[in-house]
Length: 497
Image 1 (cartoon, helix red, strand yellow):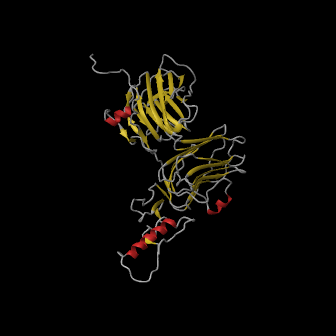
Image 2 (cartoon, helix red, strand yellow):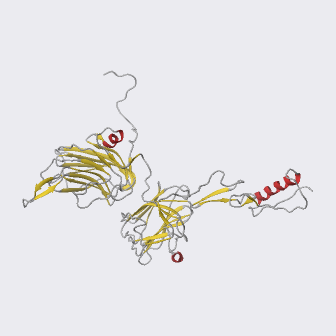
Image 3 (cartoon, rainbow, N blue to C red):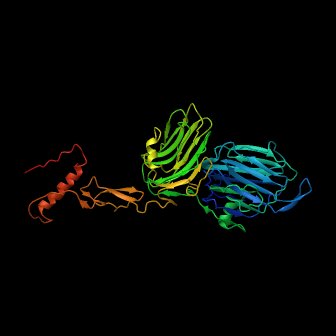
């Protein structure tokens, strides 16, 4: 081997491989058979804000086997990785019964990337059937998972957290037919079908082969793709509340000991009620938009508290924003808006005892006057809500609504007309609204919908042409009046005769 030039035998800061997006519960990718024999390894990265979802599933051919009573039953080997209530689980059956391994001690649907690494090794490994690895995996950040198997031994790594265990039974050979990610299409061999995965998945490696990349490049014999390549912001099941009087109600929010709420919103209105649920005694929870900033207001029995989002700028910018609100067993409350986090520890009562309906995007008009202290909103939310996760429950806002009022539609088209450079004439300022735009003409000498109507009127006797000195002076005086009219301390003077 001959080497020319500067060659370094290492690779640093490698660019992230192109991830794949599962944007709806129907999205999935189907890959060819995985030849595992008696040992194998799997690794991939994922991130999501959804608490439940099937990330990976593969099964073998159905086989007839005799049970302890010598009765024939159809069995099938399978392997699966899924999220359940924010925790990562590994499920494996090699013919001696299903082994379910819990891979995380804390939730993994926090929007951060996680790395999964699963290994099976028959020569090493010991421990319980349930393994724990990783924490806070539901933060919508990337996480890496790796699984290595050799014989009956399993090694599970989530980010830097490692767990090892040994499977029970006499069988060590896994027979797989194909590989599925994001969804389970073959539902005959499992009693409880897991939810589909909504999030991002990348670097899926089976025994050294990067299957997603092979699929993208057309380098494998079979690949069925119903997801999308690329890193996109996932907006799931958006709903538009077209007026501030529109709202709906859902079943009571179950958040007695802990809570994880996630939603996305998009609006042009600076204020609006997003979520409210009253409870036993003074208990309640409310989320609202106040002057363009998210407020999380609650009372667990110690008196009302408010946590205000610390976004860099107001959020009524007609762009999508992510909101995560959590409360753990230690009564630590956290409000995360996009990338900004505010955390507060509350002393005293720890349980949130809610009752009655959970209201989304507003209330009945007569209810605003009875809202608890520190709740500022007196009107509903006008805009779009999406990806609503209510402590692990993913409601269909329209189909699951107990009551609906006003104009509520699926999808989010946003304002029909938006501000353009020529939307307002004569230096008027365009103000974007959900149903269009308005023009602020206050600092001009004009009025009207688009600042086209002259507002400065002087009554003079006589007839003057447009090119006359009197007409030019009139236009100058109108501009001076327009410049001064919004100042309470202005004095308009005329100099000269």
